[in-house]
Length: 460
Image 1: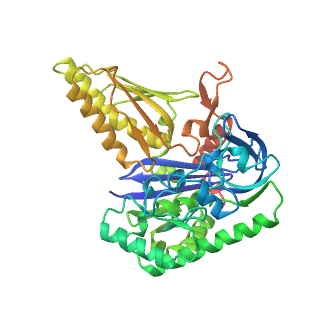
Image 2: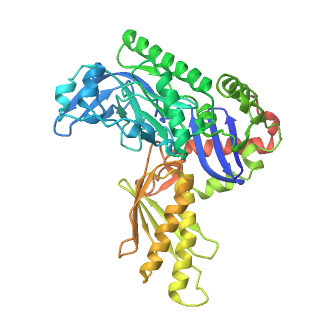
Image 3: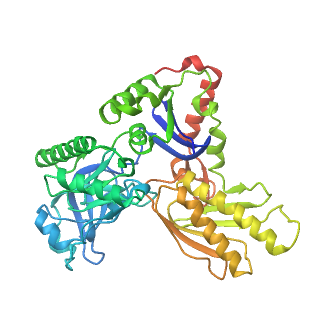
């Protein structure tokens, strides 16, 4: 599989597209007024404790307070944490879907401590945003800090060593575990990421030292900063893409900004010098996303209805609670019997659904209403095809078998806003029953249209 990263840098907006065999499969957008704050670390102040929900609201200096569950609260004392909390499995999930880890030590037994015993209103606390605000929901935060690097993720509030499940060789897993154990000087936890497979001890040692120093600098800032304050900001979308997506499989990174290219090369020089030759500065007169035929795919990813090649179609509906996907035969009438026609439409829809879920970054609860098939064997074919199609997705998902009503229920890890939330806004004609392209997105589209007609206007 050939992979490319295509990065478009404009004033106030950066877009990163991951291409597999020339097709866009993931899209990341960052704007100056972006609410995507996942990964940021704050010194907050407890605003309100809710014993009935075993949760609290923490003021981190934003318009909305962060929501923290009891399992996401730890004390400043590490030994207290060991006695009270088991590991938080969300730590590795929010780093990268491909880096879910098998841990090498047993879970710590948890006591039934209540949130009012751990924190009080007005108390200062360090938290990291695990999920950015989405719609009316404020950010979800945790005290279980995790700092991702290229090869490792440091978890200062845990002592677990995890190895990415994507590293399947048992001898290699054991080798990496032993390296981390031998290098570890503090009782910190680490996740060994997928790209660490086969690398030398020196690289792991260098990154472990960097992450340890980063954590110590955050602790120093915490001691002196007022509450609320931002202690650590996650990397820009371009550098996150380099850190998490640029591997030996990704043959090229093409970017249309000279200053952006220099920033990436500087980052690679520090952390991944062997990949510096992968970076290419795009200097064509045609906008970079036009050159790679990406704008049409992005526009289609905002539509309710997606047509299948056979003439069938799927409809994707977003609600506050879940996302519903409906499969229809449409214009496809088949050639033989009804069951075969329905099965073919459903199997074709499976591939498109998995693709759209990944491209649109749909998360939370997803209900898929397939066209009813009578045979249990055909239900199993659809279910297994969906599981197989979702293996390409970096985000973790959980799928239940098809019900007698032809429904498949699944959940997918949600960290940031889906594409529709990012690029659209509620319709002001129907009082929010539908979505329109947002005014901000329209302005960016107009700006790109101007550049198509007058490419010399662009500056770096």
